[in-house]
Image (cartoon, rainbow, N blue to C red; front, side):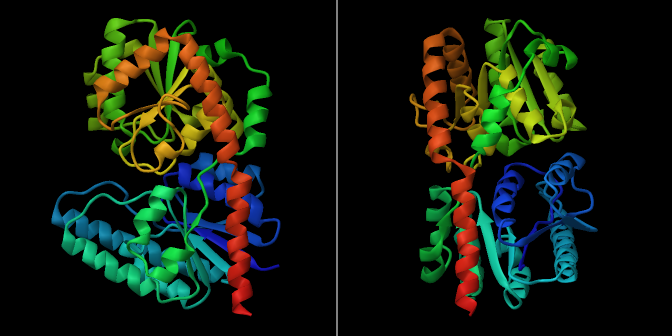
Length: 401
């Protein structure tokens, strides 16, 4: 049986890893699969791999994903990236390159690593969202790097939404651009239905976490970082709570804020109206996380940069009315006023108004919850996306013969 290796060099986990899990489930039917990832990867995600019996191999080192402003800090971050990618490539070689390596490295940052892989095997990358606007000189450098990797016939690109595909088509050669496949970020309908049908005691779960049981719960799920709109979320929460004490806000994340971020969170004065919860406190399995969606009355994700967030799709599929932002791939999931409500990124006033509107209008909540669930389950089935990805592997291997 030929081997597919899925590899990345960062320790945070989120929608990208859940997306890869969907691909792995399908590829295991045809290929031996191995995940290569850093030693310090969050234990909860490693638990997800263990629960499904997915083999993984670790390497020492990982990239520094935090934004840096000074030249020295940026140089240091670049050096750390080079070292971590080298360690990852060595581990991939140790595992044994056979059929396919699938990663999410960007040619603009990791051209040499991608070239090294392309000289040895079929390489697939998944790109989740368009990049922020950059000066013309940087775009020209990207265009050059994307053009270099496009010269390899065994290099292939998947995008998780149409917006990303349209954007990256401008950077790659025509051959690669024409070959880009959409493998949507998606949900597992079986997991969703199991979570919806499972026994569930909302009061017990909220009490265990110290969260009031008699409040209207606004939930966000995702990394508590700037690009997810965390400060917009808290600003809107402050506005809503000042007018209605029956509403509370919960954010579930693999990591909680530290240092200066803690002080900034406290500055909003939300006290007993805000609860930041580590996802591993909720449970160790994907089912635990999905069932937790049922404590909420409303889902909110005010992202600035996003493909199609899996947490948003899961909330919609679980039957939660949802609010998100009019950016990148999100409008492919939320059709405004139909499958959810859209606001502009960074507009806390609009977010607060949308939350208050849905709090007050149960009929609207029920309608967009129903239509949102139907849209998510019909258009974002991971089995379809994963099958398309694995078909791409097989097509690449057939072309080798």
